[in-house]
Amino acid sequence: MDAEIYPGKVLPPVVRHISQVKINLYAEASGDFNPIHIDESFASQTPLGGTIAHGMLILAYVSEMMTQVFDSNWLSGGKLSVRFKAPARPGDTVTVRGKVNSLEEKNGVLYATCGVECCNEKGDTVIVGEALAKLISKGTTRGSK
Amino acid sequence: MLPQEIVQLIGKTGEITVLEVEKGAIKKFADAVGDANPLYRDEEYARSTGFGGIVAPPGFFGWPTKWKSAMPFFSEIRQEVVDTIAKAGYSRILDGGIEYDFYHPVRAGDTLSALSKVKDIREREAKAGKMILSVIETTYTNQNGDIVAKAHQTLISR
Image (cartoon, rainbow over all chains, first blue to last red):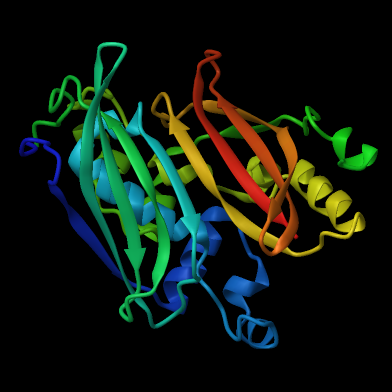
C-alpha cells in the first residue's frame, strides 16, 4: 500500500539508461520513425548533432513514477503539464524525480500537486513540469498478487 | 494584429482518427518504455484490480502509425498551423509545453477516436520580439462516448 501522501513527500525516482536500442524499440512500438530519433547519419547532420530520444518516451517515465505512487488515481483523473527543455540522447542516464508540493481540495475532492523533473547525469533538465493526482479511494484498486 | 489567414485557423478541426486498442500492442508499448507494471500485461493480475482487466499506460497516447494524425505532436492540423504561421515570417518553432488530462483508463479492446482542434492562436510581445502562441487540443473518446483523455500542446513560433 502507498505510504501517506503529504506535502514535501519525495516520490520514488525512476532511473533509465537511454540507448539507441531502446529508442528504436520505442519507434517500433509508437510508429514514430522520425529520422532524428533513429538515423544516426541523418541526425549527425542536423543542429542536434546526433539522435535524440522521443519526448514521449521520457514522458512515459514520468507517468510510470506517478502510477507507482497514485495507481488508478493517476490512470484516471491524473493531469500532467510539462515542458521539454533539452533532448535526451543515447548514452544518457535520465532520472525522473518528483515531490508533493501541496494538497488542495477542489469540489470536495483532494488533489496532490507534484513538481516533476527529469534530468540527465550531467544535471541538465530534460523535462520539467507539474503533475496533479486525485487522492480518493486510495489503494482500493490494487491487485491481490 | 494576426494576419487573417492565421486567425481563420482558430477553431478548425482535423480529421477523426480511430484506433483499436489491442492487448499485444499495449504490452509492446509497456516493454518499449521499460514499465514492468503487470497491469499492462498480466490478464489475471489486471482482473484482480479495480480495473477488471488490462489497461494501457497513459504514455500510450503518443502512439502508432495510423494513430499519428491524432497525436498532438504529429497531427495534420498542427502542421497546417506551423506552415501558415511560418509563411507569415515566424518559422522558428519552440516547445511551449504539453498538457495531458487523463479522465478514464484506456482498456484493451477499446476503440478510441481522436480529434485535434486549433484551440487558440495569439500574439505575444516578448523581450526577444514578437511571437505567436498556438494551442492544439486533441480529444480522445472511447466507444462508449466517454472522453478518456485530452492533450493540449502549445507551440511557440518566432
